[in-house]
Length: 434
Ligand SMILES: [Zn+2]
Image 1 (tube, protein in one colour):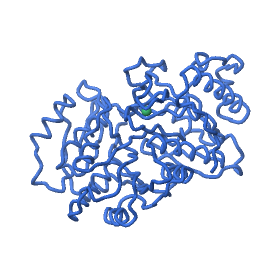
Image 2: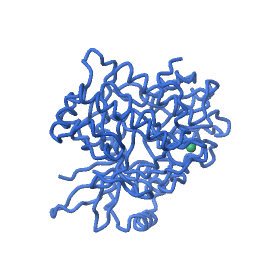
Image 3: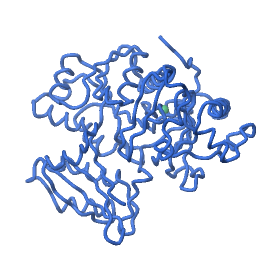
Image 4: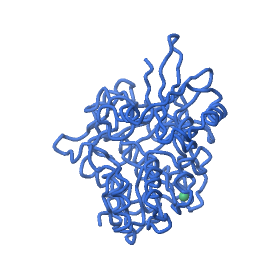
């Protein structure tokens, strides 16, 4: 078994020891970027950065920030190795504009595997487990491949069923008896409905744990989200939330205490920043800003992900001392200023998930003739007779303090909206602002 990062027990080290380790890795990264990265060479020159002065975390925090627009505009200037050293080209999903290519070397793939090997250990999995992987392994998608490699490293068997197809998923589940599912939570809701339609009793099924990707299974107070409640009602599954972005090549996964996803300090340095680039005070959500540690192909320095999360710094009930991230409460670019209120799509989605009669939705922001944000909810119900318009309006009103425009549509219209241009996952948020 390949253990590229050794097994330094950093996740239970004292915060000062973690910081000292990270500072050392950051200093190595700065030297590496300065000699290998065309983008960062230019950035350091433009800002007159003297790397010899970066001898503390405080001085590091004064270095310039990098944004998604920088990678979109100069994607190949981030590459630090010759093209011949690239082992795999992955890409972001492009839900927020142009997709970004992240190229990985063989060493980066090992790092990625180690990252999920650690994530699966946070879930307390081992070689006795088997894992049904309900994610795509192709279409340049990083996560599916990362879980595959992490499970292989841990010795956990993988069943690659891919996304969708509830009938096939259930058939495989009954035949091969996996103990763990890796899935998108909203798909599990659909799968559960399908299982109910076959008269299969949920307690007869083998899975006990779920690695839930792409959607939050906790609310901002770390209690089960409505989506999680809908999955767990009558189904004895332990849901583990996880947060990651392709660019960071690292995940924050919950442990069995379910109090936020743990940082992997060997792989990533994380900051939570306000709109002026200053650290937020604990208890406030800030923009997740990451510095990759140990990445060879396309390392990133103080990269702003656009995701807003809260950080938790006290020692976890599991005994780990690493900081944890709560669920994504919003995306910076997706902030909606609507009738004097600031909203984020997850707040709207949380209300819609509560309404069992809503089968699918798209949250859309447009602008009116005065350039004010307009919020439109496109909704589809598989059972129009069950739709409770009053309850929907009341819940939206009380959660958001404003009432968005509501448009009901057919399943076909919904599919066209959710899968534009061969998108590999449903697009449930559309930003049509200028
Ligand atoms: Zn923990």
